[in-house]
Structure formats: structure tokens, C-alpha cells
Image (tube, rainbow, N blue to C red; front, side, top):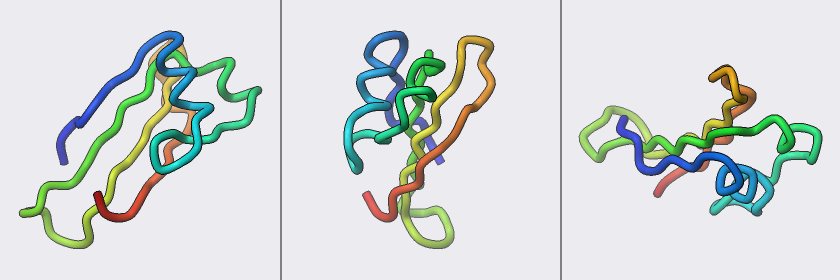
Length: 72
């Protein structure tokens, strides 16, 4: 897997409120805690199905939640 993109601050909050597949559509009480969003994706050479993993983190760096989308 490799990191495709990263959002921080207000950009992370905006991404967290946007609808999938180009967002996470998190509830407002979660969005208020989001400080960073990372999007990770599989390589074509990785075993198994392809997917992207959207990960939300709080200000301490703790992962709050993730959202997995099949394919690219």
C-alpha cells in the first residue's frame, strides 16, 4: 500500500464531511475531532482485491475511524 493523499486542518474536516467515494460522510461529532485524513491505496501488484482506505485522525494522532472503498 502507499499513501495517495493527505489532508490537514479545515481541508481534512471538509473531506470528512463530503460524500463517498470522494469523502467519508462522518457524523458532525466525529468531524469536530478530525485534524488529519490520509488516503491509502493498494498497488496493482499487491495480493488480493484493490481498495482505498480513508483514515481520519484526531489532534493527538490517534486514528478515529476509517472508510474502505473497493477498487480505485
